[in-house]
Image (cartoon, rainbow, N blue to C red; front, top):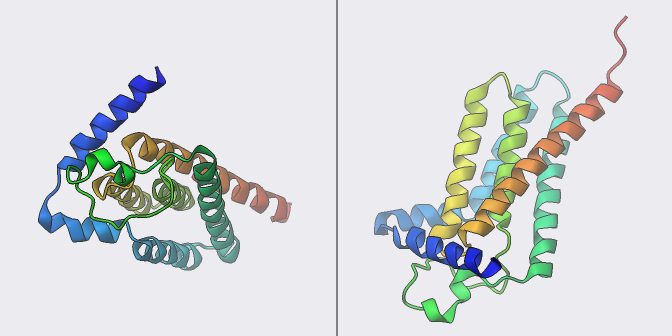
Length: 189
């Protein structure tokens, strides 16, 4: 069964990775870059700080803590699983569209997908009444997740598990933030 899932994952990767256009390459490289991730994280932190009525610093703290924990746990799991990236498959050399440089890190599961979805879900929950913020954050996270397949760094299953993990971490981080707020708010008479 595991071999069948791996086969489907590789076939879906080859299909999705083959759907590339030259003009899209620099955009996907930017979306996959740490520069994009840092800029988005800073922008979301600033919006949480300046748009929130109360708990500004605490909101930013729990947002960044959630993202940091997501990245840390993802990388620990990568070191345990040690699944090679698609770009490392010598059989595919010259076949796949690999536009990001070779790396020695592992593929399972996608840290980019996990951290961007952690950010997007926490952000969406924080700005629940201003839904456009959340929708834009989720759209950004989805495009970043797809970019990891596009640049040949992850298989679709890596991305899917990263997305699910990120959603879970975003919800968990926000719930911890809400719990902290409830404990610290003064009782109403």
